[in-house]
Image (cartoon, rainbow over all chains, first blue to last red; front, side, top):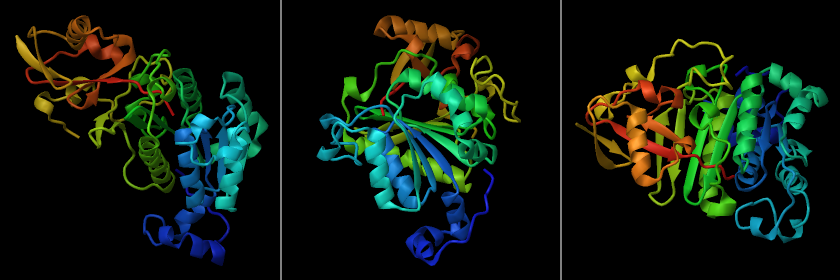
Length: 287
Length: 71
């Protein structure tokens, strides 16, 4: 990601973010980068409220919340930006109000709409700041949605515009997480290279979920986003799988499907080895 | 015949089986819908288009994952 230079931190900001700035991987420049970053969160439910809260607290300067749902009573055990007074109101409005209270440095843009094809096509036309942020590589998208058609649509839009996508999902005691980045890790492929179906019913509404499991997966999603923004560590090419019963994370290396209809326009990578050469017998891995 | 381990269970398959044949065998016995899963061979995801071109070897570890869509 391009490190963007912004204004100097105020004394108040320096004190507020001091524990982050203390990390050599962040430092003062990193905090400025966070403050100049644009992150869109699609789905302001269990995952979305958690990541929004964490990213706002960390000083991500520009958040975009997208969700057409209103708060329901059954949301409260895991959607932590809402309270009984929020019921019946748009999730994005309630969440934005809480985030601004949490950190006035953050500009929160809200869209009480479903992420549809029409919506995605109008986004850059209707928001020049967002378009500029994308051109400057200061824009990433977090998929916190609750259904497979939206996941596939988000993947398609991000793949088309080379927008880094941090996709996370959770239901029952299971979670999944992956970073998709066509510009920097095309060899790992896109979401469609791993899951191509539109017809998955494994969501929180049908399977149930615990807020604590949601919180864990959301924290990993927010951490992945912050590492990406700050260029910390190597770029992640795994599918991470969370098992809340076994209390474990497992990961498998992703590989691009060269016949994938979604990311076939991505550049070739130096690491386009076939699965034959990467997958070794007896559980050994080369990487 | 060779042994492969699918989701921690040992299965015996023909020596020249490809991944698609192995998965079809397992799908029949476990009512598994192959259109809704991702497959990892020895910790590497194998894209669906390569299942028929990827041959199983003795001791291979195959993990099947259902997509999780909730948020």
